[in-house]
Image (cartoon, rainbow, N blue to C red; front, side, top):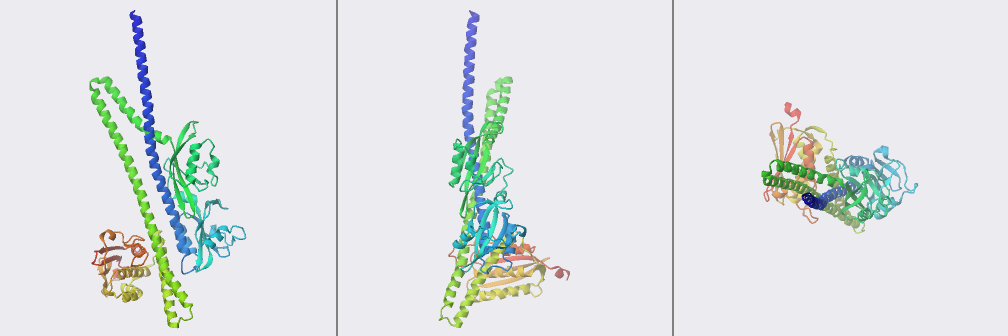
Length: 584
């Protein structure tokens, strides 16, 4: 009887143990699924923010690089003697995305380009039946981006066509090949577990970091009918949507695993692309495993403490719970910091895009105003009633507006050379008085028309400085022009210089409207204006002070500004004394 009863007790005990083990396994699997779902959602949200950042960066990069070609094509001085070769070289080296830049004349023949070894001189579009895009920009007068294709040199890229007009006459087009691979290489993703790919609006593959698919082929051709999740992701990309998705795929070990995908659209003129960022679902598993490793480590230590120090069970479990909470809080803080940094970067990109929009509006205004004046003057010149005096005045007005547009284009090219370190300086010993006299000749008429007095407070014995004379005159003209703009009639501008050790400090001070503290730290930023709207009272494209800063620093000097609202502004730049003066 005892043995029979004992056996029943063992059976009951075994059943209870099995039930407990089964319950533990069940709840463990359920908890594991919930944890994986939460971690996967957070991981994909981070991936989406990263994808939005990269796509908006690519969009900004492409639009900015094509804008340089548009500005060059709209140069009011006409086609340069070297057929844009020097400008091509500057843009090619600073943009870093072009495979080649060419100028095609009105007859459809390639006449110049850079680099020369990649230019098919004498190639005619009409003779080779490749004139469609050329005719398109000729008729529309707008930039056109063609679908990416493989060139004869084995470069897969998009073709950029920018029309060149002189007045109403079509003079040709600027043609550039943008390497899609060079675009992606601007954003280093090789050190991450993500794989980048790029699709066009038809679902064709423009770039695939994994190398699994050939460029130019349709992504749909690589998807089977039963791969519904993957097909829906690609269809969403083709429709210009953004979001997250996942689909199952067989890995190298013959096991099915999820592939996580985040995608975001890229809009480039007439082209709509989609950037995709894919990663293996094992990345989520790695995060979970790292947490579980720590969890099991703590649990194992807890079991050892329970076995040897059963009386301390309560305290051991309490400490374990606290350590786990701290770890979760730490991981949460890390995720929050990462999310904040990505959101901050995205916000900055939006701000840059806003500034770009304002700049384009301002440049359009600055181009339209003189063009309107020149158009009105030229129409009046065509009338028979126009006498010789009026004709001279109108021609002078047209000439001034041409100079105004030329200066704006020169400013844009100068800031591009400064930022790409392509600005050349011919350093020599320069007389400050002589440089200032040349500058005053350029600004005197503007100051006299506005009734602003310019006073010189510079000792005759002021030492010569080591600088580029032409660049120094440009700095003087920019600072004086800026001072006259913001000084009301009857105001005064004082130019002074002082020797300090091995340097010479030169200041341009006015008693104009001054600058608010919140704007003071941005006055040397490119394209920055206190009033950047198209209705602003003072013209300009916001490059003068930025160029002045770049030129002064390029001559191994420095520049600063002091100002208070209503009390005027004082710009001070420092240059080194020339060696000749130092020896004296």
